[in-house]
Each structure stands twice: as C-alpha cells, then as structure tokens.
Length: 188
Image (cartoon, rainbow, N blue to C red; front, side):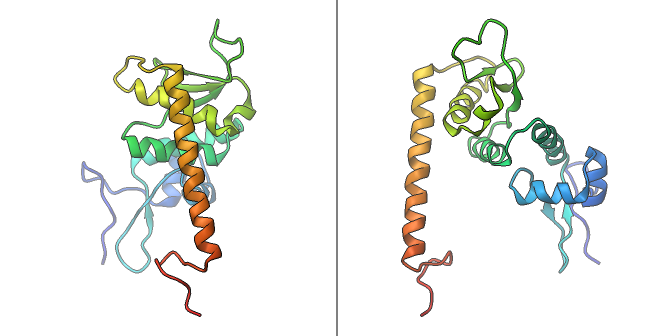
C-alpha cells in the first residue's frame, strides 16, 4: 500500500479534511485556494494521489482566507506567492490601513518590522503596480533593513508589468496561430 508524504520530522502530512479543520476552513475552500495557486499540496503516491498539506502551506492558507475575508483578491495573493517563490522570500502579510504619519498621497506602504504591505484602500489591492512596487520593498528588506528607493521600486514594478504584457501578447498570438501548450501547432 502506498505511503503518505511525510514532513522533515517524519510526521505524516494531513490530507485535505484534517488540513482544513486545522486551519478552520472547509475542504472545498482548501481546494479553491489550491486551484487559485495560493497554496500548494503534495500529492501522495498511487493512482488516487491524495492531497497532503505541509505546515507552511496550512499557515499560508489560513492567512489567505483571512485576507480574502478582508476583501483581497486571490489573483493578488497568487502573484505575491509566485514572486516570493521566485525570489526565495516569504510571502508578505497584507492589510488595509495606513501607518500613523504616512498617509498623505500614499496608496500603500511596507512595514519591515511587521513584514506587511498595507494598502490605504481595498481597491489598491487590485492595482498590480502598487502591489509589485510594495513587494519590491519587501524583497529589498529581506535582511531586516529597508533598502531601495521609491524610484527603484517604480522601475521594478514597471519592468515586471512590461514583461508580463509582452509574454501575454506572445501567448495570445500563439493561440491565434493555432499553437497548443505541447509546443507545436494543433493537428489539422
């Protein structure tokens, strides 16, 4: 009989039901967060390949559920997770509000101490420039010190958005030309 995945300490990782219970979410919500790319499961061996969730994914799932309750879009959460994985840093916390004395004309701020991006208004969570700009500050402060300038954060966000638009345009052109994701044209 195939064995379930284990963590580094040899503990069996929980399947979807117990994982959901541990973080206060239904299995359906856990599946949704996985489908949206917010959390990731390890698949067990065998034909069924049951989902098993490592503890860091459960913590991220709980944080994601709280963020969604506060109105944050899953696309933002997924994008920040992907960026964090790419740069090998933790996903920053997200919140809505402002820091005292830093409110005038600010869409969002990053707190090094709290490792949190705070958007002044909920709608700023949907603005990729704002979120990627603040992620740059998260990335540049991974050592515990805030490094980088506003100009550099702006450039980072603009370069990312430009690269994204370029890739999206190429994908659209390939689809229109009949290409599939297997790397070649559709059989005709």
